[in-house]
Length: 398
Image (cartoon, rainbow, N blue to C red; front, side, top):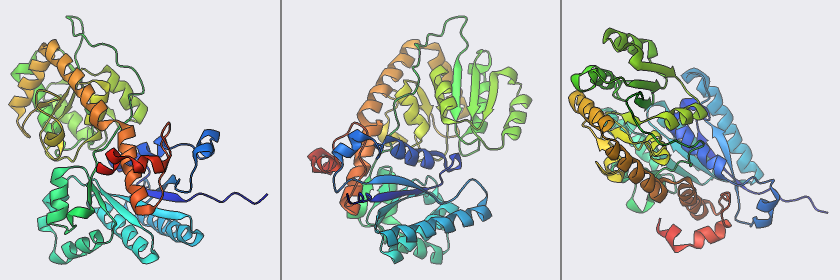
């Protein structure tokens, strides 16, 4: 019997460690959602247009110097994939700063090798840094963005920036909202009685951009000063500095620094939380907000980036202006005192998640783009074959 012909594959390029943050999680969710190519049910549904998603690490877990070796290995794998004839395309996940540099090298290498490539832009701060970049750097970035078959963005603001500043024509811009999986553990009903300590949760890198100083100051203000709450900050960053700030404010046992947390630990914290708080100054569309909606956790956040275009204040979340410490304290205190408002936000946020942010919807939209630009696509678990997905008018419209 002749040997089976290997199926084509698509590289999903990004930092394949938790260092990659939300960008890594989005890519990893796609990998986790595809069918196992060795599974008998998958083989029965396999078609000539089926492909496997594979990770392509472009950074590693070490610093900038160490990442150069990882990037060199990634480029070698591109050459090997091209020579084998199995590499159908590369889906490059790109952010700002050094990610922009590394991924630009990947994009231009794909172009030189004749490998189809699409770019998925996750940058939340590029629009602010853009005016300060030298003209030569801006010209180089525009050239990089002229190469991909399409540029995936998170929403309207990102699409405007990519078209206006990077020169990507509208027909090559695809707006795809990120998706997250269903919660891995159930969240029991939350009823804050006289003996219950309200649990507030912050998930993200501890920084000024994420609004951590304002959050700590809000806890010390009058509206929250006498509330026996507990705030857990889950994330890396300058933890010692913020712990010292919390102690100087007299917050004591009201604040717990969990440090960097793995996905299952974040899921446990989310299941125990009464509110998720993210008072950021800059964002794209944070995955932690989508994960909170999926869990039915009420959200307090700032209307920055794509957030106000997908969430409605007092319906799906409560908005507070960036830097408004007093407003943040009052909003948190009001929500903690109003169980009916928390329940409404929980129910409406959960409904929005099912409608817009469920992982199968996200996977199918990405698969449709892969099929269009690479000619093949991965199959989602419990999903129809790629041809059927592509033939759906609803998916084509997406």
